[in-house]
Length: 249
Ligand SMILES: Nc1ncnc2c1ncn2[C@@H]1O[C@H](COP(=O)(O)OP(=O)(O)OP(=O)(O)O)[C@@H](O)[C@H]1O
Ligand SMILES: [Mg+2]
Image 1 (cartoon, rainbow, N blue to C red):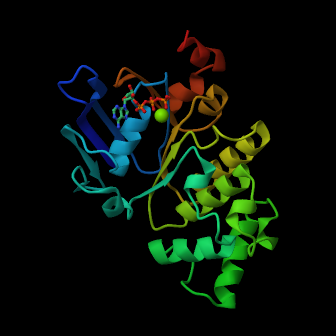
Image 2 (cartoon, rainbow, N blue to C red):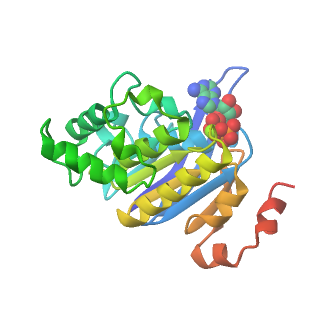
């Protein structure tokens, strides 16, 4: 369970360009919840994710993960709980290294779930099997440098690597924004499947209202650093796609 308790984040405090990016947000996110966040540009969505990941620290308030107050922990100190996928497919993996070597690095870094750490054939076989579950045919390209893959392929592999961590919380900040519609669809379906299979708690920021409508078990809207709407599973299920568009009119 994640408890976000009256969290504030102000940038450039006291200066002419002061921004109250997060303005006192309190929400609880239960285990295995899949929370979708929508909201206009600059409403504080990424800042909230940064606060959860530990790349930004709150000025006020606290963040508790599974009973641990992580408010003052750096991002690397939170990696036992949290994995993150960014908008840019290039930021999750090393371009010059092969797919296999990227998985080796991930295994060493995170003591990945269900993966032995190693350089042997057993490890290679395990990686191939995991990659085959994506259904993209990439299991036959594991010696190929990551940089030769398309954005969608990289993003799917980044997702797979991050959910194989021992982590329980997956943060997705517009993971499909740089992808064409077909690749975006594959990546979203992959994310949804992995979140279900690994029983992850997930937070997805998206500007794609179709995805916001189709995925997730709860949806919030942010505006000016605050939560302006919060719909639970049943309320989200009752929501019509047009209602969601109306939120932005
Ligand atoms: N490091 C920073 N320094 C100064 N201001 C910042 C910083 N990070 C974010 N901001 C400001 O905080 C506000 C919220 O930004 P944030 O990136 O959280 O918005 P967002 O909802 O993710 O927007 P978008 O949909 O465009 O990604 C914006 O006004 C932004 O300019
Ligand atoms: Mg953002």
